[in-house]
Length: 248
Image (cartoon, rainbow, N blue to C red; front, side):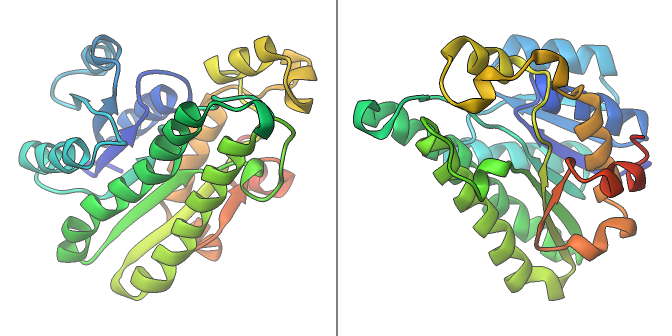
């Protein structure tokens, strides 16, 4: 990844922050996008000003996403990898009790935010003739969970975007993949546990994997070893994948 340029959305915490450190450690230049300006600025300072660029950005806003891509290219000269990682779990409520405004908000971030990233990155990557776009997916993309209708529906849509991207642009040098990490020890799991909604809330926190695991898997997915999964989700629940990615 030396001198490659990587954009990570949702970079202020959890998998996004871990990925920023992993990619920077592998030699990449990283643009860190998140709504939380102080956190991404702090992380960029930790990584180093020559390597990291902090860009406050709400992925649900097309203009902000477009401007963030443009700012990254202006600073580093290219764009090799986009990690669509920003996401929210709320609202955690059964359909009959759900708040329509919160439901819309989840779709705006988890689905439309992925579309905005893809749409803004494609012209740059296609002009280069190469690029990798990875979306943080979930088992919820293919399985319904009680009380998680917004999350499951938006993640299912994001998976279809990965498939559509591969179909339309795979022949143009664009690598499209999804990563389904399973349950990860992040702030999202704290919220799920506190909600008490659904089977995931009943899990012992000790079973959650560290955020560094999906971060390292994302790095592995940028190489040719992951080409067999183009257009698909890679699941970290699969022991063979954990071995291939060097996690165990």
